[in-house]
Amino acid sequence: MDLGLKDATAVVVGGGRGMGFATARCLAEDGARIAVVGRTPDVLADAATALAEIGSPDTLALSADTTDADQVQRAFGEVAQRWDGRLNILINAVGPDAVGTFEDLTDEQWRIAFDSGVMGMVHCVRSALPLLRAAEWARVVNFSAHSTQRQSVILPAYTAAKAALTSISKNLSLLLAPDEIMVNVVSPGSIASEALIGWAESVGVDGNDPYALMSAIGEHFGHPAHLPRAGLPDEIAPVVAFLASRRNSYMTGANVNVDGGSDFT
Image (tube, rainbow, N blue to C red):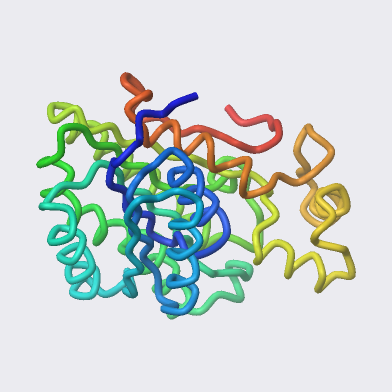
């Protein structure tokens, strides 16, 4: 399907690796101009080069810590200068790195989870809004998580941050509806990310085998998907790309599960 993204402008926060990069790659294949934002310059530079080779006519690698509002503002200032003050797509694919039970997590770990998982998105949307409103059409897609609907005792801070992000996204969809800027959330299930693969290997499982990975998830967490394997980043990307595109002309305020099947309500 042609998503109508040729020469559209997109910022993918967390686009250097994992699901963020898979999404950026999907946009690049459709001809979008893409800026990847993150904290690791070398990773971002490699991603921008790869996206150009895939088909993006214009790429940017912008290093910024999204928990720092000034750094985010500077990054979007570069986007505005490069693309005449207009932005069609903002995708926030950054998540907090907070693992531990409620009793184990420190106050500092809770603060970091909310700074990276909530305030980072807030900073990016706030900086992007003038550019989104100036564009002919605009979309925002934020990454939430299936743990907001199916809890894990080792992810209370991560899940709380993602739940807050989901709530704010719903509010933004209402706020921006008069501008016809659509805001949606994607909630990945058990996806073979670097973090999940690393966890699997720490418990003696081949994390690169999606069937073994899902089996381990069922054993350790008790809630495997209906499908017998974990998902892949490339299976998230097309869903995000559709929500971020002009083809999505009447869907906003939704939380879309991409989870291999579950008992979500």
